[in-house]
Length: 297
Length: 215
Image (cartoon, rainbow over all chains, first blue to last red; front, top):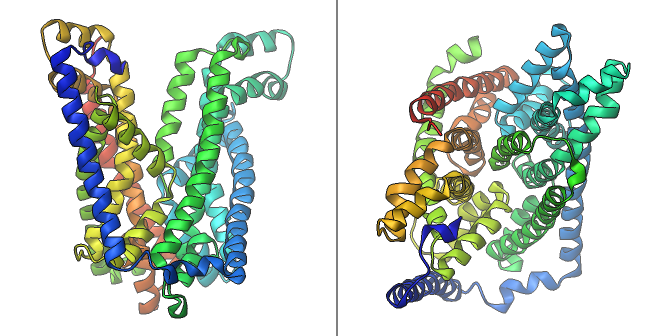
């Protein structure tokens, strides 16, 4: 599409484009240069400020923090998928006494900020009800409730995007409701929605960073700790950069997987009978939820 | 109920902070997103690459980390002294712009090719084509996802509470200092967020109805 917005450049347009390109590069270089200059002027490049990376104890500390982040991510992702599957089935149920409460639960958890959910679990429930919830479980359960609700919508959209003929044919073969759902509809819906599901997992991974706000010892928490160490020259800027690289690398890997799956599903005709526009619509809707960082999506 | 009535001042001030933060960040990130989208479809390769790089990096960074950077690391650079509130706005704008950019770009892709071709045939250049023909139609078609993005932004403002900005996410701290039930207080906060989303949804319905394009 982008190439439709402008003609093939002639000599004048080429010159203009080049001028703008040059100007753009200059402005970008100026901004980057200024930031680097501020780095240098405030002594952020001093070797002493980066020395912390050489200590084995600190490397182990960061590795431990990374493991904590990944642990919260994996447990939350598995629970969210389960939660999503259960509540999607609930919303699709023919019994109103099942589908109404399921709808209410999903809509509620989608509308409440993830951070407020985590606070409710960690500060609210433990103080007012006396049920002790560790920081780990507060983060994991919060992520499960929010992302599980989003995933429930994704699953439901995937099932609804299937042509009616699929379920009609299955009923025609004499299958029961559960059978139709588990052996005909769900496998196809899962395949069509796989890229969306994986990009929702990116959201889960990003949102584990919220654990910092209730002092779950994940990457950001350790970054704050190390950044406050006077005997390491308080390298908070440096630690933040290191952490950023770790997060971005992990999320890019997951995003690349989602893109790969999307390309593959578009290429293979075996994904078969799903209505492509309906699937695209459902995916778009889910994509919006990516902005939440408690979430963006 | 008492928790709410006894602390109305607290809730009022906190949600005012939230709404202020939301409005500034929403306007800023819509402008930022549009500019980025324009860069991503422009004929200048440098701008296209920059736009794509920005979006890919920012979309894969946790918002909490961006807040962390602006709250703790930015002051070390000694550039301009900004208040915590201003820094929270910047963090939200930086983050949400990347998502708005992708939504607007997907809107540009839904505009029929003939529209851009016709305006080129009329002799419009890239800027004219984009701003007077394609973008107005693109924005109409992405009202629902764009609203969803603003709702996400509204919810994301709560993170600012963790970085010394007084708003709805920080109510629980004051409540526990004043000795009230934190659980009830937080459930009220959740309810108010549900209420705040309603006007946004209504606005979306109205814009959708008024702007829907017959094709």
